[in-house]
Image (cartoon, rainbow, N blue to C red):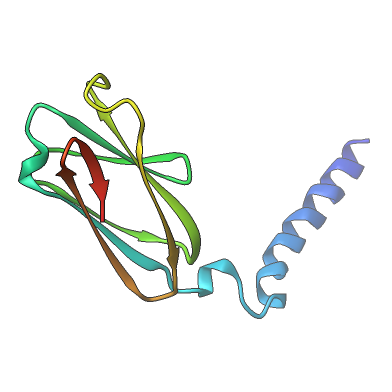
Length: 118
């Protein structure tokens, strides 16, 4: 039984080593896009801005800060939530289509009585 387990693990290890070379293009070979989210000063201080991409928390940006990061190619949903939450109850959302190697700049600001991500 122990000998079978060792053989199985050896085969799995060998398969994982050679699988990368057998595949002509993997996800790591595709250049990502780049996302920048600027927070304008009119958003105000004392409020935490939380950025999520496709439902996954990415970063918190404070007053006067910006977010810069790589993002995989494809369609994504950018969501902005706030703390304290009583200021804005629903997240601000923006859908974007990211192409490999391109840069995208979004700006978060107050417009009338709501937040917008442009």
